[in-house]
Image (cartoon, rainbow, N blue to C red; front, side):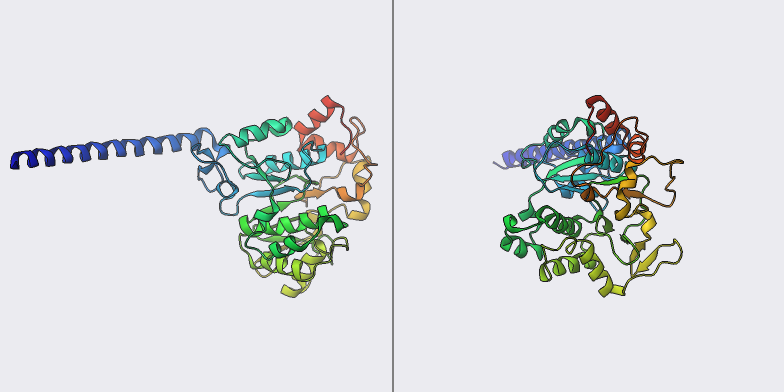
Length: 353
């Protein structure tokens, strides 16, 4: 009996030792695989060096992609899936300029995530953008996005059918909620990126007395974002254009530190937030938006700007379009900063932005 017990003990020790060696071997293989992926496919990895997006055993989520507030956030609030050239150009230019950062495009028209090949299927829907492996597509579900924020109570009470500017106010709410949860850099889809914005926490002057809501960047769970969401609910006026967007940003900024003053073309500050001069993003102001569709001679360099806002809301009737061969400023911008979209526009003879 004693001999049998000794033999059983020896067998158990041998099995445990073999399992340990096998586990170590698997760990080593995993480390080698991770390193190979990191160096062979650098564009797939976020700037923090993690390889979360390369995992195939789990469904990819926004948290996996956006990480430590490193992402570019873009939204499509309508359920349209046939994206116009300006939206495609905006996403493409962001993917090019921020090639080492993930561009998360949240779209209301996308189905829920239910498979590990979701990103592959989503990319096939947008062949113009399919070559950019730093673009990730996620369904936009407002009830989930607003959870654990002050916006959820507003969303449960509001009636979209009675809202005059529902697409716009819901877009305002979504950008606050996504910035609170993920942080990073938010951009409207009528923004053409030209060069990286170097600031992490920043707001931008739309003019000398109005704070923009079209482009801004903040760390996850920044107090400024939370106060914006509280103001959104407390002072909601959906019938007043811009009240929940630039108006809200301006109100909160004034409470934080008053309206920052610019000296010449230098940027200003508000605590830990940089306040960018209007020239950085809005060298062409809203009341001159038609100038984008004119011929400029010579062409502007925009050397003091990071991005350009094309004020698509002002072009409601699509009376201004991009004509190949017209030599307008907008055609030049498409050629320079979203050449894939421009090539597609030429091939398909599409003119409407």
